[in-house]
Picture (cartoon, rainbow, N blue to C red):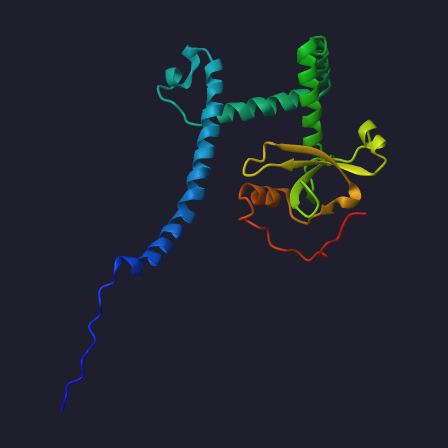
Length: 226
């Protein structure tokens, strides 16, 4: 009678365990990379806002008064200043002071151009009834047959819109992965497809270069705005 041979497990070689190690490595990166970037961005923001403490006389800084520093104190002070300014500007007397301040700035040649442009942009963006960056669009750019995401910035009719002879919308086409740079285009409304995704979802898709794709919603495919 011949005894059965029991197979002896062969030790795993490096090429065999590489796929498993790669899977674990990617899983770890997916956990730590978003967390690390989030912490870095918050730290940069806090450090930037903390520089407002440089406006405080040295003898009144928290280090001198309390004997130790408070991380993020600049953020708290900045928010408090913004809230206080808003409370003052919202009442009648504050509105008159703001109007007086703006009339002074309007007399300074270079300053008035920058201030008026930024003020108009800010009012448009933060207005509850505004249309800027409220919709995500899909347009054919840079040529027919190629599609990209864009954000609607306005539908007001001006001289440029009138002279095109078409109903056009103003759109901003951001670059990837940096959406702060991009192109301003006036696109015929008939060539624009309005998407159902939110602005946040659109930004995620652009920043990730298409890696992060929002889930499909129940809207008819290929539906264009008339």
